[in-house]
Amino acid sequence: MVARLRCPVCTQPLAAATDTRALRCPRRHSFDLARQGYVTLLAGRAPHVGDTAEMVAARADFLAAGHYDMISSTLAEAAASALSTPAGPAEASEPADPTGPAAANRLPASTPAAGNGPAQVSGPAAQVGPAAASGPAEASGPAEAGGEVDRAAGGEVDRAAGGSERVGFGAYPLVVEAGAGTGRHLAAVLAALPDAVGLALDVAKPALRRAARAHPRAAAALADTWQRLPLADRSVAVLLDVFAPRNGDEFHRVLHPAGVLLVVTPTAAHLAELVDVLGLLRVDPAKADRVADSLAGRFTPEHTAVHTARLTLDRAEVATLVGMGPSAWHTDPARLAAAIEALPTPVTVTASVHLTTWRPR
Image 1 (tube, one colour):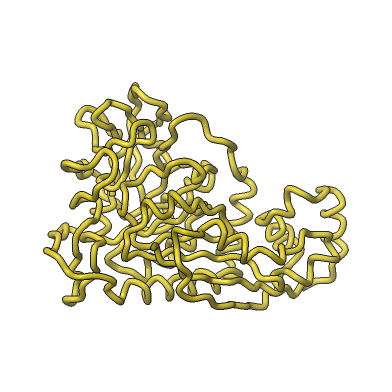
Image 2: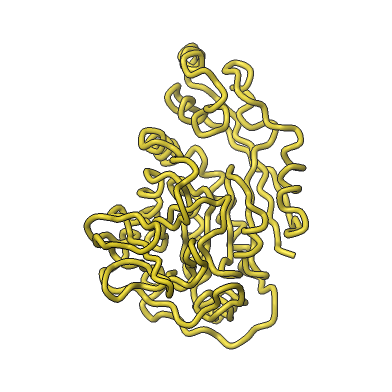
């Protein structure tokens, strides 16, 4: 994992520091792990703090109840299908770490250290993911500063267990979720791809604390997805975007030519039962066109499907669901709370989304 990360200040490769548990580039910009298991990879201050701890806790409970498992499972199926078909000629295989993908995804534990860049100083030692063992992380080898793919970044062929080939993704295909929140969708995709490792990107620290432990093969980083992503060119096999902003240029840069971008957006039927009664924002009729415009010239749509589920919720879950969407920022809190309190229970709601598979051009 470390070998695929890049310094957000100068774009040089990051490696495990020899004198402390931190990531450092050749220009000595240093980034320590927070004690909760994530690393801050920003070139400056975060544009906003994201969801609060209370909002993240409510969202985690909502997702743990299985209400959006339809989204997680369809993403997992799409990712497994996309990676099962080679998209290019085979080359020499990259040796796999004999300890397996969980060890390959290990980041160094953090200790207090004085960094030379805009790093977050972290506390006691921590590992990323509950299954990560202690010990030094792997350091990256020679790599590019500005563009070409090196072996460690995943520029060759993986001959996975069972003899199958995955072209271009390295020994362990990298799955990245932009705006990952608690990492639940990422964890579902990793469960479907046993040789893959994952990285959750978000700006909300409370969410990243959970995402770092969402799966034994998942790591987490605080990063602004509107800026340059802290990843090597062509290093990502699967990129997930669920109800999150889309940075078309950066998505294209980090995605391998044989990789896939999976985008989930709401349909007009999404939460339709709540729109009028709670005064929520309606899904923009031009949503699909806006998504296509954000990716135009960089990606080609390969497949689009509508996935629908009926949710049975109590009032607290309705409040959490509304808080997870854009209406939370455009609705008077007191009026919304009163309208939710007046709902008969249980509340039956439609969850309806588009899942579109995009391939880089």
